[in-house]
Image (cartoon, rainbow, N blue to C red; front, side):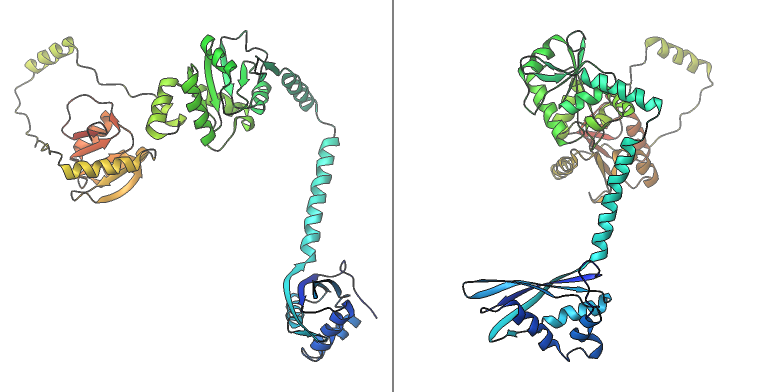
Length: 425
């Protein structure tokens, strides 16, 4: 009789069996063949399928405890998917084995080819890894490997807390504080030797002492943990600058270009404190932008030149410009603006409102100017998470917007548009 093994099968049916009594393995196999006989027709007769080798040897493992039996049935099959599923469903009709009630439930049908395919992929990965490790590298790779190894070997343990650090921490006037040893090794590979790690979330005394003697830059991961470390350091140490890895990345995985870009974008500790107080997190990209220049009063000389130029001009009647009405902020509007501004904190977003205080839309603050220009004169107020600048005020005046509501303002001159800050609310 030709029979197939599980290795040669395409599918394997796994079923569980529960019997209210004590039975042996042959009783279960006999029940499977006997109670499915003639059920599915001649083409799917289990005995014939097993004789032809399309169904393999049926394995039954039964364990008896406290007068009840339970176990597993394994049926290898080289039939197609549909026929295998029919055979699996057929064995579930068995309700009695000998004198005992029984229940069979198919747990799953395993595709053996998927398992083999996964095995092939894993083995191929292993072979490729061995090939790459044993292949002779070119001269540049050899030089880089030697250089990186030497730099990593330069890592030392610094201070009484034995913190991972670079060899130039003592002699350098500037020090970079990172989170862990892996960050130190990555910066050492890039040639930065004035690096020291905190080795945890609590600030060691060695770091506190070092911050009082040297110019300190904190370089943390781009996640929530990085913000928490910045907060803790600001509370106990004297930090000068703060910088952060790109969002979702860690310092230990940054490339040389990303490290230098992040360090070039470092911001003063005062700006970091403002950002943390306002948003609860440090956003390097928002603070690294150059501050817009404040409008300065016109010098007396420029005023005199303008008067002389006006005297030389022929007298012209100025074109009347309809003034924008200053609108008083009512209690209802004040409460509404305050609620919206609190809702926007930390989002860098903006609400555009109509005259009935309905929200026309929400846009990023980076697109606010473009949005106001495109909407024309249909906007009553704008509430946004940011600072009011001169360019925004000029655009708002052209669009006849009554209120600009923001966290603060960098413009102190006169304006026809009503300016409202969080302090006013």
